[in-house]
Length: 103
Image (cartoon, rainbow, N blue to C red):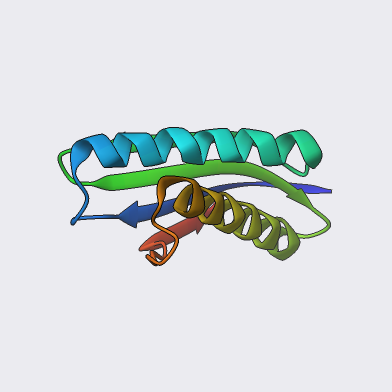
């Protein structure tokens, strides 16, 4: 099995600070809840730069190959983002990572 550290970066310029903090809290909770059901993606971290409205989501993914691990990480992050959108009332909004790196 291969372990890959994946960072996904989002910029959300139109969101006020309080809403962004709330979204990040919900996002972290969603990542933790998903990890409890499947430990192939672990060690999630959500960091926010309030001034830049920049959010970084980091996870460690384990897969049969680097590509498999990155796919699992991307899927997990997108699932958590979907939960966050629904729970915070932003279900209709879309945001894609502006940067995604794997190491």
